[in-house]
Length: 395
Image 1 (cartoon, rainbow, N blue to C red):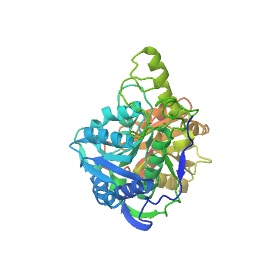
Image 2: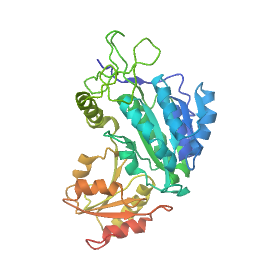
Image 3: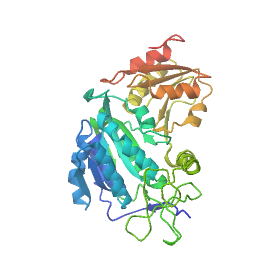
Image 4: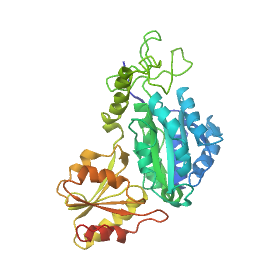
């Protein structure tokens, strides 16, 4: 049996700095983690994510939590999985090359079904690239980075305030579905300062992982509930818990057979796809009568919103479709706009999320890419030009 998600309404240990603050996106992320109950952070310094680690290095010891600087991002990812297995809500933060180093252990997290939050404050790449400049170039890596078949959940905030809220949401989703969740920020959102309102404890409900209701003798670590999510016993509390990256059966024991793979891997995928209501979020702006949709996320969505306003002032029927949960992509919500004739996908890369939009909507709408190699935010005028260019043009 799977216990219903435990909604924590007013935990004494949630000591968020309530009130109105002027925070960077990185610091808002750190405070969102504190609010969500994160008490373990492991990471390695890297621009432009270092401020998250620096902030939590101060905050977590105040709350009885643990901050540890690891030797690299490989170890950081391993550490947060281990802390989560022991019961802690855990997080790491990185960028670019560090995100690449996390891929193997991120895949381990998917396979072992361990809740954790991984923040990627994106910069321009490849390689060392543009450490201090904006990029949105890790989006396909967020979807397909680890090897094998799995389904990732990736969220993208457009402001420090939304970063705070989505960090809380990321922890809730990770706990509810027993999976790592990715928060795909970008350098501009991470470093920009804006007003951030932190609500009192309890105003934003918090979720803890499903726990077993059966006896230790009856418990099977990977026996799924009706929602395909197995209850999770913690190491050291009397239940037999087994964790392995090998294909395994419901007991957690390695079972490297076709039959075991056929039972396990599709369930890992379906527990995400069948529970979309847990994580899926979309931002819509003036889409009701739109004949041209702009699809954008993160900082680019703010430029896109301005482009929509400029176009509306000229009498154009433009609207903004903002996937807040980028992966899995909100397919049904996008395809509900069958009246559109053009979809402009704006992103600070050479066309990553655009590939998915083309797959979904290319049969009924012209899909136009507006991209950048990184280093600057797309101007509203550039996006507007793509909305009004002649059919077939590719800015």
